[in-house]
Length: 358
Image 1 (cartoon, rainbow, N blue to C red):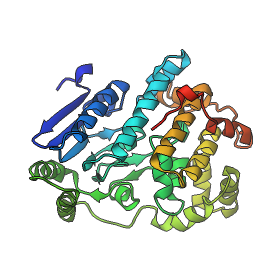
Image 2 (image 1 turned 90 degrees about the vertical axis):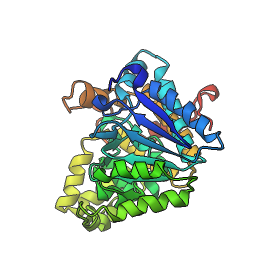
Image 3 (image 1 turned 90 degrees about the horizontal axis):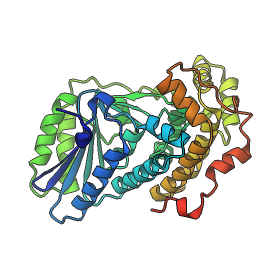
Image 4 (image 1 turned 60 degrees about the vertical axis):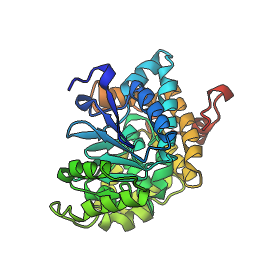
């Protein structure tokens, strides 16, 4: 199947059901503005059609659901003042909100890599089905960004300080652990996904309850993939205790005071991340805990535009995605160097005509 620009996303209506296939397998189905501009109107059309009963979102190929947004293009645009740096985040967040408020059941098969923009295409939906191939992470602090696409809404609601831990460290969850963490609603082994899809598409006049029952029946049969304790089970006490800080400095102090091998490993991880990103991210999650999804996305849009105006986002993308030397030179280079005033600036209003209003 060719992946020309015309076919980077496939939109299908099957009887009373919609299917969207992210079709850039070579790019791990990374989301670009062109794709967003096809998906959003189609989803709106289906939502407004009284005959439509459900929709499925999935990725082409066997590696990824969606590995993120087309961040390189955004930073290239940002350098030259191109509108893409505004439009991409704006339209992506509007799509995330559509998914979060969708009036017909929305099912995401997060079979494979699901990061960044791919999280935004799944985690706000009614049903999120993980498989043993699912790899979930929000690794944005490593590129001078923050866990956006509504991460500020979802992560603080995962229970305890798990969301803050995942956001600051970019820790990767796999397979059943994505379900155990509360990111996926179900776990179905990957070789059963085609049959699950076929069964869902064959349902007559399904309601959310019927869809849930079908997915649960496939989940019950998914016994080829061994079950085990949540990978962070033995660390949850430490996560809840050590990542419970009002400030990033407190969290670092907690980790240093703890002195365990695990705490030292977390310090090592955090030391590689953008200090500015981590401070912005901690506040994003703290504020997001008390906001609804729309308010979070409006806040995150401000943050995205400040990233475009600041330095670390460009440097992180250069170090991780472009030159791949994995050696970003953050400005400022230390947590102590990031002033409260600078963090306040990230959260400050944009000119009225540039704000995202949902």
